[in-house]
Length: 334
Image (cartoon, rainbow, N blue to C red; front, side, top):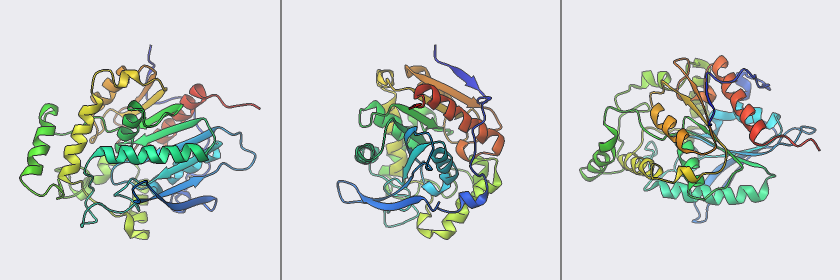
């Protein structure tokens, strides 16, 4: 029977340093570089190797969410490296420091999610070739959606998968069965590259309310603003209507009968039941379809960005990931 947990694990993971200095500085031992995709588009990558003497665990590739950039997750990347993992991350094409897809650099846009799936496939092949196994694929929000779809479609074949608040359904006043049709209509009656909403992370939310959608931790929330000021190329805003329409289509694709049921890799899903961006019922339903899934859920103490939540919740999130990986991929002792 699939384990169904609540409020994380009692295990507490070791943390290297939870200070703002770790979260607001690229570690001296990290490498940042630009890497060309098969069509020539360059994306930005980062890698962190474990410290000398650490028990080798394998490699983790972390893919961030919509409008994200990997600096937001430095604290987590450093912790995983300290635990013996070779850690990598990248900015998706069209966001972070991986260029833009429209003339307006503040619009988050993609013509089709299959472009990102293809990009992830190319990145996966290069990453697996250059890093030691076992290989773990981790995704947050939109990144979690794309990771799950890539695994389900055979584009990537990790030994274990971790999904943080994956975008498997929207929290919106528009009923699920008309979301795709409505987005198609909005693309037809105007420029599909125009912003689908004015500010924040969802229609109807003011910029001043953005933190209340993401995290209870004001300091961690301010880290994102600090990085956007320090590296202005990271700034991005709402998604385009084409992104909304293609996201709805991609979510529908993942609901196809038999697709998730064929995923044989162990999958950990982390969810906030009161998430105001991604649908908790959609995560619960996906977990029930995955043959080797574990679902860990939090209540009102957690918001969308579980890896950037206040310390009590974040410690549980990191412990849940550590426990899952220890069971799915036991550490080698020799």
